[in-house]
Length: 113
Image 1: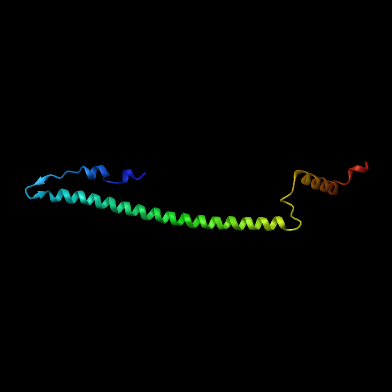
Image 2 (image 1 turned 180 degrees about the vertical axis):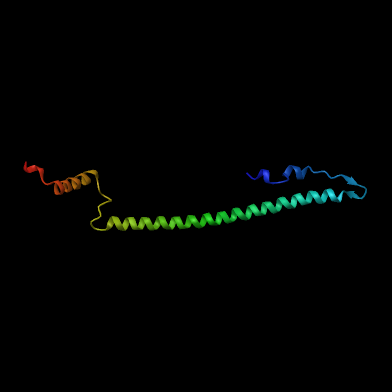
């Protein structure tokens, strides 16, 4: 995912060989290499901080959504238990009976014909 954003891999660090000068390793070469390592570490820490912030935001959103679900379930239970709200037990037959009664009221009782 972030592979292309870094200068070095763990293998590149492990296999790095510095050229030896008369007084030891070439300081400029070592400094350049360490600058790459430092840049990658700073980038790693930035990614870690961003992911931790994203995780905190996600956890907060999860908590809020769970609370909202609890509230909705409570409201649904209250609605079902309220007299006159048979929506929890309404069947197709009940709907058809109500529709039939409404049609009789609106269009008149056709049974007299």
